[in-house]
Length: 533
Image (cartoon, rainbow, N blue to C red; front, top):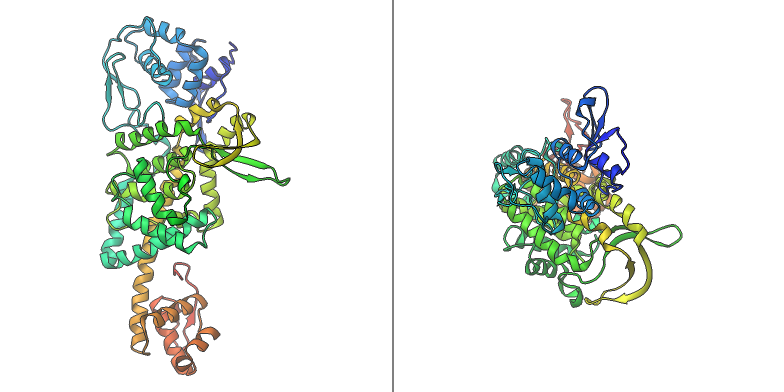
């Protein structure tokens, strides 16, 4: 072993046992002169005085890591493959009542799916494996008599994403739910229902736009219908039957039958570089692992019921997209899950749908932020997996999919796929949900109120059908004047300049586009909060 004495905890263990971490450690501990803390980009460097320096042993640095840095399942899984069972068993025998020895003994057996030989049942009081104030944990703990541990891990050995609450101070569901209730109280359920009808279509369009399929109107309407029909209503969107039902509802008859349901072939997300070579941006886990990982995701959903709905939705959505269980439709179903879970958890009152896809894709900065959230896991994973991936002979797999991707060592990425740290992704999605409420749902309700006022005013000026009023309002709000096209469409109305001014005034007043300076020639000024459709 090599001892790089400046570090403590996980970083020391990484260097001493030559086990490279894949996902960056959330906390890195340094032994220095004075106690200090520095945080940047979601990570923290903690500096401790010299008397905190642990002995140069596995048990001492594991104790330090669990005490001060938290639980890094991905790294611990890799570390235990190197250490083997002997040092953990010896520690457990020497400290049968030690809280950290018991935690490590349990974690070794849980992560490796093996038993430590020669270790009897532990003593002492039961201790929680995770600090519930620091992590998203299981609501009901499993008592493990052998280690006298309350297992409150949120998932299973096959799939257990982690969310560190210490980085998520703004993820308060009560505050955002109060914002929803305020919007409902302000505009009434009739207006909210109308807003939701449009937002469902908008959400569907945006979901396809994220995947560059925005022009396929049939698919858009099918996804919108699936959102309104199945969100929070289907028995479970995470079972094989539930995924198939939603996938069929979204894909329709055009979907090749052999590619429905759980995939049985490799899948990756990538692009082509400047010399036309394929580049893998994200490699999903081997298809043989998908059933057990989906079982773990379902267990996560069940075990965390009653916990923060925002974080549950984030972990389940990103967990789903990283497992990538389907040959097609993974991104859309992952975003479907956000509204589905928020509805099931009572955070969203029926029939509210949040336009999360629309927020994700509304501008280049937000689209880049979504990519950054995905890359928070995919980049470090591919840094270790690229060396074992290559493209060669094309092979047809069980589900009919042909692929020329060959992976020499799937095990290299297994711990990262199983124990994804989704803290950064959860923080990102909470911001998206907040924006969806404050600027998506509310802006649409404001638009509809203004629209109703405009229609009422127009009916006092001109006769027309509802679709005529809609055309006139949309054109005026977009162009801020009567366009040549509008004059051509309705010559009987817009050939009279006096009538033109009355129509413009009626619409602009309704949408608060008039700057009234006290004279008769009010100026039309753009308003950033007007939603033009």
